Length: 573
Image 1: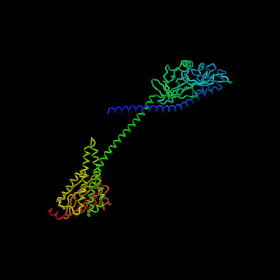
Image 2: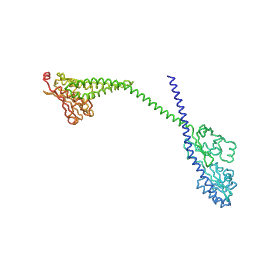
Image 3: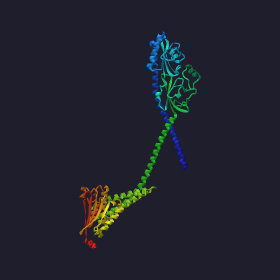
């Protein structure tokens, strides 16, 4: 057992580890595709913005005030050039615009009125100046030599009759260009042609080399006065086969994707911490494990339900066998009833009687099944068990009385009669009701006869008739707020009557004509539909009658009336 549990634990851990590795692999591919898609869109946007910044120097190179200031640099023409550069700078929302002669000296500038003006400063060492002098136009990113603010310089040569007479430069500050792209957990970087980060959504990466800088590159950066690179390279290029490369900075591993910008020899790079990748993969694993757990619990519940169903089916089969045996007995009674001429009508309906008796038998079977299920539980409710036993006992007695009554009435001869005490019959009926319907008995009021009249009859049949009438009355008052059922004995010199009243809804008019026919029952009552029929047959067996009358203002009155025989009078005397 221990080894099996250990092997199961090891197999589970290995499965989770494999699942985590697969999740990391697919999450890495998913993020790579997503990052590459974002790079394509943003690189195109940055490329268009940089290309737009090169338009203004071209326009200024053809401006007459700019050319005149270079060809004849007197005070008036230089003032016009300063104003033209200042106006262009304001309209384009660029940082600065300035004009240099062929020696790199600044002759006019948009900030000519400020304390720190570019006028008179030589920027001939800048690559944008040398590039424009040799190739007509040039761009360059660097930290401002005068202001110390990084920016993007776009320069264009100013010509007169094909000869270069100077260079006009427009500077745009790109520090906030990527700020609008900030989207945690991603970091955006723009890396120049030397491999140094020049733009970033996070300041910690600015001017960080992404490659190892050699001495020649370091001297170039120093001579151009571009920026001051970080003293220690924070990125380590690992170059896995399936990725662009990963980077390590501040002991954090990054997943990196990059895209070249057409306007410059720059790389736009998108970084994300690898721990985020692992976290996403772990969440996938947890979700999948949760699904498997739910599925396993569902399967386990299904197996438990199946075992319970098999168990219940087994007991149901046993109960079905018992029902079949009881049904066989009832079928025998049915055959006896059919053979008797005076009960031919009930014999023709024996199949329906059998069905009606099967209903309490089915109720008994359900009670037994519930009883067995509760007995299997360790914390069975004793009160519930006791109630099931009481209900089952009540049902069996109910079946027994019906069968006894049918057998008694099925004979060709009259049942055995003897002199009976009417009060004693009612007393016995009340005791039976208290045992079988203890709650309903509280709504019953009894009025016995002081003279204690006697009658000739069968006590079992008379009790059954009165029980049927009283149970019908109890069923009729179930929905009443103040239920009331009463029984009283009325006697005269010729008759003895048992009168049962209730304050229920009464019998529907359409049922009154067929009230004592077999299987006719008010839908508001529960029963076999034989109670009143049997009560009437019992009355006829005693040469009496059963009558119904509506009660005012509502309810029903049933009267079981029988004649007083000579033997009963003699016994009373």
